[in-house]
Image (cartoon, rainbow, N blue to C red; front, side, top):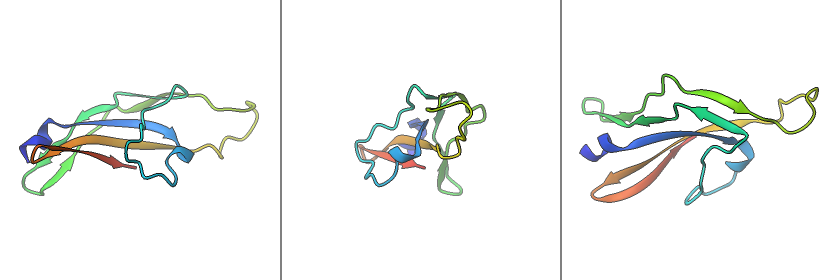
Length: 100
């Protein structure tokens, strides 16, 4: 499990409709121009005692969300998802891991 300590975790924000009904394999979930996160990179930390991995994002924040439509229009219909992804290496093979 030493390789988990070397993995980076990236947070991305994307419109919710992009995440629905997809297999996610090979999908690029990087933040788009209309949605930007800052401090979106962290190290994956493996805890030997609990046998769990965790990444901390203490200063993660949204810089910009531009929405389509009129300024007076209600925007509750537009939802966004924050997706965390990492490439984890086990026995020399890389696996893309996503959490929504």
